[in-house]
Image 1 (cartoon, rainbow, N blue to C red):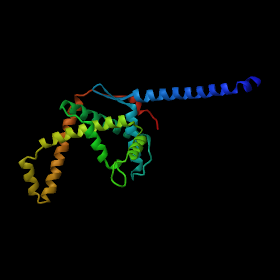
Image 2 (image 1 turned 60 degrees about the vertical axis):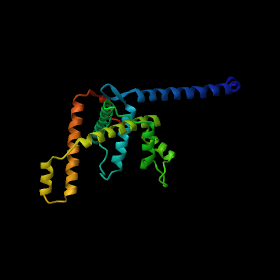
Image 3 (image 1 turned 90 degrees about the vertical axis):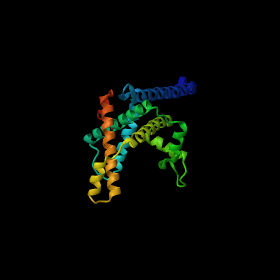
Length: 224
């Protein structure tokens, strides 16, 4: 006891140092695992489990906020994980194809996109940095991670905008719609949109068939 009383300050400092060291090491290994574990690979481009978890839990949050009133069963969580994989693969595929078409997204474009996003604006309809960081904290992504993801999404949207003008309704298609006697403008627009979706889906399916998509089955393991 005399020894402990005499060296209490040193023992206290050593204890604190060891505590923070063990915490740091534990946290470090967790961060290393979450950022380097691959959830999905698309043509050799790795999508981290960290990004997968962010999108997945966002889907869970949306599901719980919906009016379905259905419990979050194992079957539903598996469906949401499959939906997450589909979303991430689609985003990566469109981004890779955008690169092939020479489509790029500058930092200025990203800045304008973020500043114009309604979910980051305050009551005065002005971009609010605190709201932005609150969103990032909620989805558990750093600004660098989210902005990289957003750039890919913008590039994919630019590619879609490039492909859509090539779609046309043939004369026989418009003639049949006009003969139906319904609201022509609405019907034509609906028919055009339907054809755009069909062509984009066919194009996307062909690209996926010629892509190497590898899914880590561990992401479908039971976990909250």
